[in-house]
Image 1 (tube, rainbow, N blue to C red):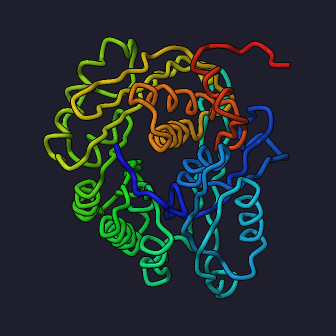
Image 2 (image 1 turned 30 degrees about the vertical axis):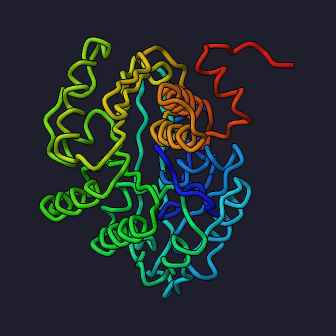
Length: 357
């Protein structure tokens, strides 16, 4: 896959930034009085891979004006090397706008994680293309990949329109469009027809389409194998068939990818991935990984996949690097992986956990 030359940014993402608070030591929320807080969003998780590995990235977002949480988020993004741009929205009093909170534990052993999304008054639901100079961003500055997430596309009718407008601007200036479906049932409730139409239009503009086992089925209505269960390796042909159906419906896309996950227990997963590039299949065979916190593993996969593509590597390495950055993300308490360098990622792929001195 080729990318536009002489661009200021490798990857740009629209996102609604928030914070996650998580009990320490794998304890459940209701039993804890000490929490670790960090800035998060699925889309900033994705670009963190490229940012930590030296590429220039940017998030398009919106902030609550004067909010200490907004300041916390900005400081975090700067620490990751991620640039940001967005409107400053007046809070409007104590019952006005705010940044979303995710309150969730990591689980432990046989006790699965539980996450509560507290998104009332979320400022990110106001994202609007009018707040951004898309001709400057995509035309003058230049972007190689615009990455869109179904989480942002489904936040509100306004954010659906925002994602569609960004996709059209990106295509106008030769920017590649990546779309991770990220289906969430709670976001889709009573909006199925509206969101299916929006997601189908965004997917039609995408050059790269990504989902997990269920996303293609639930977001786009593509038939596929039952998610979860045991023995993922035996289902690979079924997943290939599903991706083949996606390609028939969205022939403009050049790359299709899906992650595969089997949960043995909270701290041990079977992790795999499949990509279709042109007519060539590339598979990271499912194998065990150790999990500290599973949140962000899928985002880590997408981030590594896009980074490998931008590096110009052979397609076989795309899925390998993505598999490894996804696995790496599950070893961090933050929702995003923080790779030290490419060597560390390739060591994860190679199963080399020996000390490096």
